[in-house]
Image 1 (cartoon, rainbow, N blue to C red):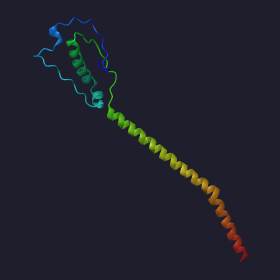
Image 2 (image 1 turned 45 degrees about the vertical axis):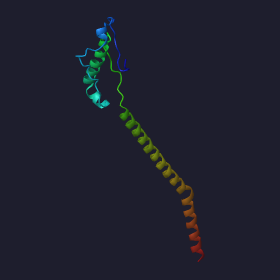
Image 3 (image 1 turned 90 degrees about the vertical axis):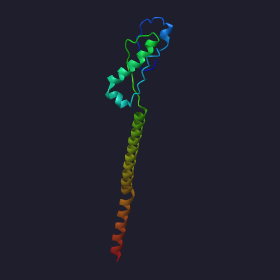
Image 4 (image 1 turned 90 degrees about the horizontal axis):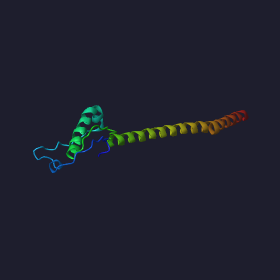
Length: 133
């Protein structure tokens, strides 16, 4: 049983040889091909009906009646990959922003510890030189 089906089973009747094989005049219904997960989410009832039709017809051929089932989850590998890419992009942007903040902090630190004292010393020396002229 596929993992997306939860079945409630009735006591199955024993299969006769005629029941064990599909009748040649009755073509088996084609298995539905669900589209992307977005389409399934949009029309969940339609998808549910298709799954029920296919699953119950296969199980009835085995002598099992489907009373109810529950669609538990739908995965879309492309959407998952896209979300992971978006997360990585956001993380990179955050790292870049933190690096820019660190550069700004270091620039201010350099300004306070090196440039300002150096400019003050230069100014003092220029004034001293002008006084000796």
